[in-house]
Length: 244
Image (cartoon, rainbow, N blue to C red; front, top):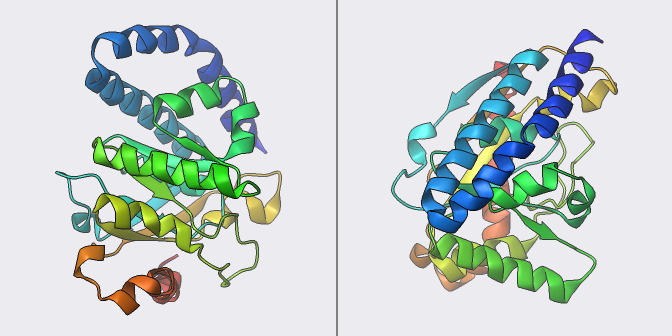
């Protein structure tokens, strides 16, 4: 119970006391967008690291050398917990926007920080709007911003199972030319979702796979890229189960 109280208290205080920082970030962006991107990344990374510390989450990271530092990428990961975002965001080496559900726009202050971080908001019920979001993500990548998406579209609540990967997510890599980084996450649901509302001390494993470049794939391989990446993540997931 104490971990839940600590995390909730910290998040509320951070969002309230970061309002002046948002104002500074706004004007900084008017003068120097690159500086704003770096400072927003640093601020939110610090806050997320505090949340992980207060939650008692320890993370084993494998394959981080597979993530290029000199180019934006498309992170593709499995999704079981809200902590997937926190755990993966603190590892990104450059400004990175996450594609989130449009409902997140309703959360005051948090949605402001998400916009600062180049996050995009997807309404999966609106095909036209969804296509627009994908095209916006392509523009982000072309401007140097990495994108992270969980192509299952929602958190998978069944242990050791995976929801279908939506193929539209991979259009970002196809149209921008950026590498795809498979991202396998083990045991995050044990932090919170498996025993709501309590937060439990948990060991998590995060593994980055080798980059996949769409330009190097054949026509048939491109057509089934979502299954290829899903298979990589599934294989890695079951391999790493013994590490948690």
